[in-house]
Image (cartoon, rainbow, N blue to C red):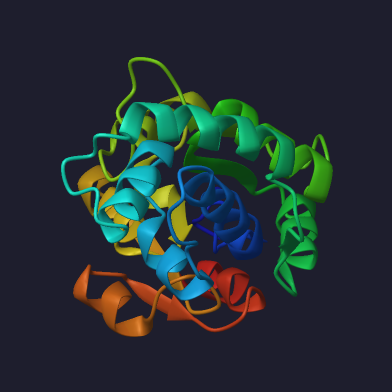
Length: 220
């Protein structure tokens, strides 16, 4: 099999974090007397890091000049550190997929725009330690997705070619990251966005269930 490594997005791909994200951003908005953010809005506000998430929630609440941004981000950061695991769980089939990839000696990596600490807390608590070969969250000096810098660093670190790696995600940001790095992408339909968005952003493959990721990898 040509594929030697699979890089996964976190939110909406490995873990269903929608409840936690909606809960944390809603508490943040309510702290400032603003309205909460429901899950349907949350799924479209996330994906480009915590600051963008907070900014979008504030704009939605009428703070178009983001006067509350710095204070709101600090509050969100504190709430997220405390409540980021609320009702978080792996999507059905993810744990089996990861086990199968490991048994086939296919390397796995997480690449997220969440903070490094946030990614580690989610992965180590919900999925476990030692499952992934590497975990990449937000890091100083490295731009967030869809900039391909982090993905290119991962490819170099793993020692694989771009033809030997798959990038898996659920949003336009993820598909753009793969395009920017020049790697094949898989868009998943159990996450935060829809098939139209994934296809418009040049997903190479679309899957409905985690087991189809391995099936796809075997065909490449």
